[in-house]
Length: 315
Image (tube, rainbow, N blue to C red):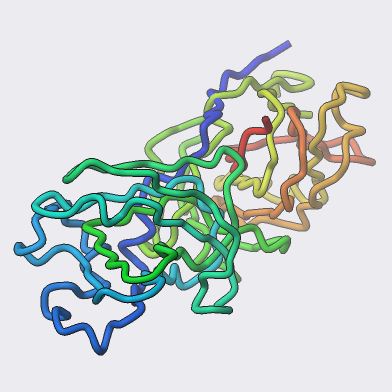
């Protein structure tokens, strides 16, 4: 039995700061007399300078329930947020601030679910909130409830991955969502792909890289890890010849090894993938340890040039 090794990342966090691609506003953006120095966008400029007079921190006026909001411009699953407090003065002003994440603009977004609360952050320091399961939402709000409060943020970083939409995404229809591989060497698990990348899109890490693979013969393919929620599977077809052999293949995901895992629930059917290209199939958070690719109903060769799996670990 021929076995292939893959390494599966368990902690699935995106590596790019989503905040850098969003838009920020705050509760008194227009009326703020210090707006030249305290713009809402200062918290997402990538500058961690926490001295207010250096021009990289936000500020509201003294008011009731001041808030700051980040629009990620699309729906994401947020896995962590890092907030940097002001250093030169008044770090206690941020005590009691709440983080809300969601898709609603009701009450300027402040009515979205509460994701975390800041007890205190020392001056000039950063505090990171992590959510293992992730919290879905387009809007990130930081609000200080209460009267006569002033909100200052010196940097806000947001990490996560695109929220699954449940669709099967073909490479030609959704190039802005996935990357494609025009040429992969005729080997499994080549790490140095040539690909195009839309810098405004962030994917989680490929969890397939830390699993184990097996197949029926040297020439039915199961990928094992701990149980995960699988949001999408990316499959790359061979380029040189016989690309049609993959037509009709099924992707199955689950925790059973009955029939070598081929009886697990079906995520998708591969109608066709152009030679040397990749297609992404959304699995809508299906739970499972094993991912199988099987061609049912006919005698056939199964060839896979790359399999990528995106998801999040279960508790």
